[in-house]
Amino acid sequence: MPDRKKNLVVVMNSRTQRDDHPKSSSEKGPSELEILKTLSDRVSLNIIASVANGIRKPTELNNTTGFSKKQFYSRTALMIREGLIKRDHGHVFLTSLGKISYHVKLKVENAIRIYWKLKAIDSIQDAKEMDMEERERIINSIVGKDKSIEKILENQNRNSQL
Image (tube, rainbow, N blue to C red; front, side):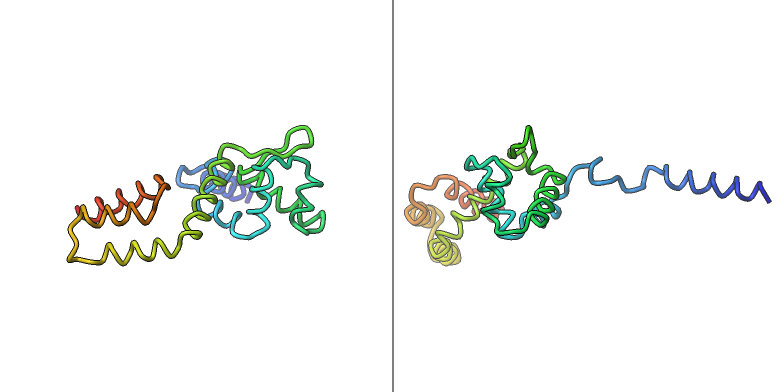
């Protein structure tokens, strides 16, 4: 009978040490889905934006959320666990991942701000009777000074023609 217990322990140990065993989130880093899920509400976006704009004290940050202390600290703990923010000497800072996430948030806000221009660009891109140079000229005039969006759209046009 003792041999069966010993065999069971050996089998269980070999199962937990297999290479195909999924690693924990802390070993492999957060996934895109985890980051997007963490940032998928207004409160998290407000926290990221507030930290990016210089609000570092947790009490001041909590005032931007309207949450109870427990809710606020649960949210910031999640953001710390996902690697978006960090605490240092009682202050909150964006990590490199948090800075990039904030930058992406600003890009999305900009795209939403010019939504109707983007819809017009979609219509122009669908116009088959226009040649490529004419389309790019009109798109450039619609986008205006925002070179990053212009570049994204130009690259997308070139890739769709391949």
